[in-house]
Image 1 (cartoon, one colour):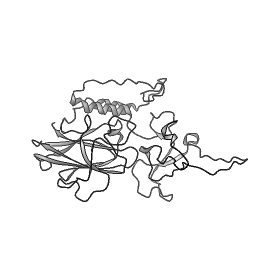
Image 2 (cartoon, helix red, strand yellow):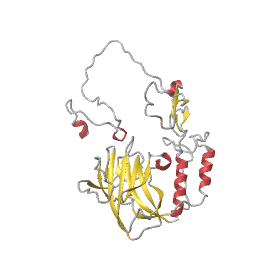
Image 3 (cartoon, rainbow, N blue to C red):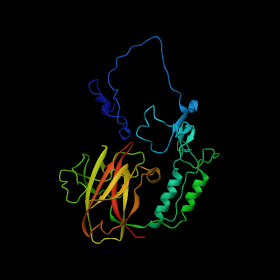
Image 4 (cartoon, rainbow, N blue to C red):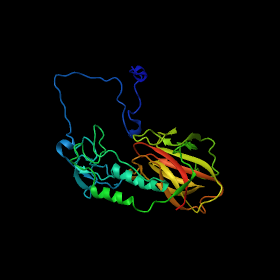
Length: 321
């Protein structure tokens, strides 16, 4: 018996949501003693799944108005499709409507292109077909069905031969290879928290990356963050100012980035194209003059979690070409 099960009693039930990284805004804990009765008749009812009945759903991939949950909401402009919704790479489910998302293979090609300026000259994708429980092959087990959209795959391959992307030099490292300390709070601070002169002595100190455990664990969580919001502050020193700058960011989900009190970037969501493999991404921002200064600078970040996993970390880059 585990120590968690050993401590469970009628007056000490497990209080937490079973999957903390997927906790809902409203839920009820049903652990504990129940009153029940055994009857001679069994009555049951179950809504057939979309796979069993091929049920039609109204759907949209665009963000709807806030009233979309209301039963009286007018969804006449939405599309109609059969469930289940997913990609052709979704295992063990009969897909009725393809929910258009970049496939893992195409995302990997995009990642390869990003690494060419850093010296990458070759890459190998080994899983040509599905095998056992791994369903991320380009073809099915029997190699009878090609699961990728061929045209989209070809477009992604052709992009590998386009000019290399922007080359960056790290000015202020993110916590990709080594944790770096931040001042942080999960309580809403006083106005002006993003400015350099703000007093953050009462804030906690912890290393990045800030976040919760994820399915794709390509980054190491330095400080646990499970609340809805987090505010970060960090100081850094520059000997000289570059002509142009950018940022290296890992965000899930919405984030605002400030330098010396000025909002320099705002990113939204955890977009599959950028985040499916849970990697930090480099984003050019613009001219450094008037934003960065020689000597001490302040970096401040706000991140808001909207659902699922959550994480945040930021570094500053010099754009070199």
